[in-house]
Length: 152
View 1 (spheres, rainbow, N blue to C red):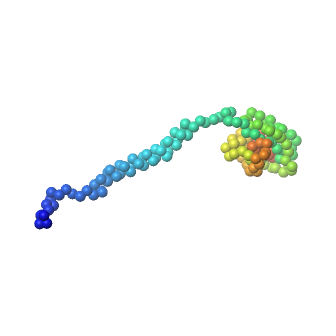
View 2: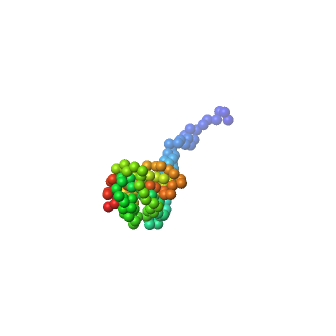
């Protein structure tokens, strides 16, 4: 058995990794296609399946309107300009000092989604946060001297 000669011409060749490279590349391509499908295309389908509600189907945003610049009846006039919007005016009043040149939304206990809705409905983009869980409304709107651009 030890003296047995090996016939190198009839021995099958060793299989190397590069001889199956097409199989490896095919598996990698399928895996990448599946990853792409589930991350890009399925995300779009999930968003399309989620219901999109119009403003009239969402709950009204509760606000307090404050006259921040001292003009007579400004809070009342501003509230009247919002009457056709999905905004529930809880109360109106004046700020302690009429120093506001720019109108601003104050977050009291609302969230970012409601803030974006309120900004879209009023046109007021400036905002600040003064959270108070016991406040009567989700937001305060302090109306400044620039009120005319938001009451058109």
